[in-house]
Length: 318
Image (cartoon, rainbow, N blue to C red; front, side, top):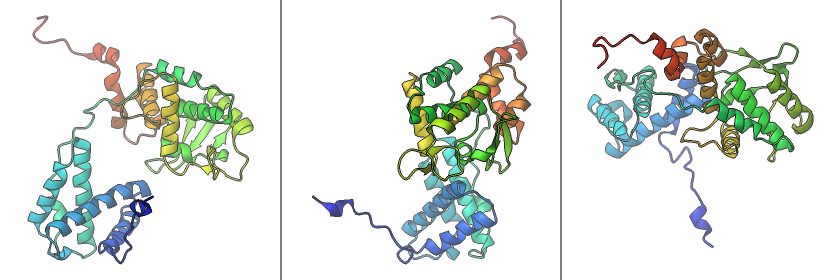
């Protein structure tokens, strides 16, 4: 009835005066900073928002004329739109990275990144979202392994819940990455850019074998998990895997909050292992954490173990 209302005009590089600068910024993030595509997207968005603010508040001004006062005003504006400590830290970090690029590329004579204030952010200040292990187990058991989709989804949830691998790591697993004799999965393209090996439990291995033999589409693809929607192929982004996790957890009667995806199962596994008094370094190795301090976040939820090491109150019993 009104097709013109559904046409979205995408500006070309000729219409976007910031396109060449942002292209150079993206190349800098890739070659100099070594950021992965997903990380580059967020930093590039922060740089574009900074440029948009400059063009709106100081139209016609060249980037070389940028002043410290204008940078602080842009930072103040971005912080006013942020609601969490994480988003505030990300906003200032992205602006700081973009300003460093301007100085590195010779687009500005000053390193204005030094004047960007650092927002307070306390490590380990929050509790990780997690599910009770009985709820995870019940959701997996509720998946009917009678259809190809059900067989695949059960294998996906079992692999996520028993190894703690990330969404992107699951999507990157190839058929040759499974060592059936040793019961191990080779995990590549990790967040820390380090490959690692995770153990494959007997139940998980059986579910993967069932999926490969009975449910996996017979297409020429090296990847383990494939989408059943056309065109049949590997998952290209994180959203389909997250939808599978949310769908199966809801069908299992699990009440989900704002965060519900592959990482929720990762948090739940880590919490379960810490609760079983597994050594913290083993949990860190399984999750692929570079620093054991990252894994220490899960110790906060082990209330019974924390109570054992708590010091008595100096004032005695009130």
